[in-house]
Length: 65
Image 1 (cartoon, one colour):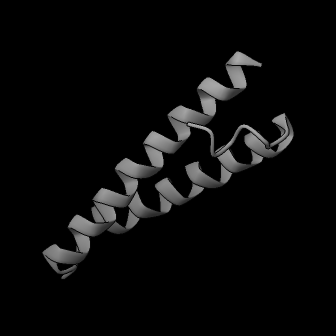
Image 2 (image 1 turned 180 degrees about the horizontal axis):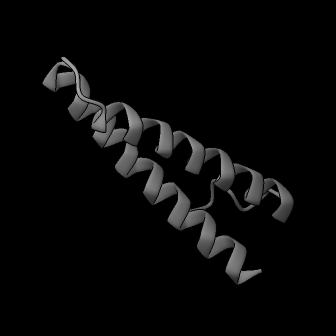
């Protein structure tokens, strides 16, 4: 993924931290008992999976430098 290739390592690490915080927030929202509509829950879960893909790509970028 070339999206992150122009970023510095510190910026990549900061981005990883932000993605992890966002994933954690999403996880809290979806696991919290309540009346969250299934459509919203599915959208959040889809976004969580995409964040994981982006984090994986960032990790590969960081390790390759």
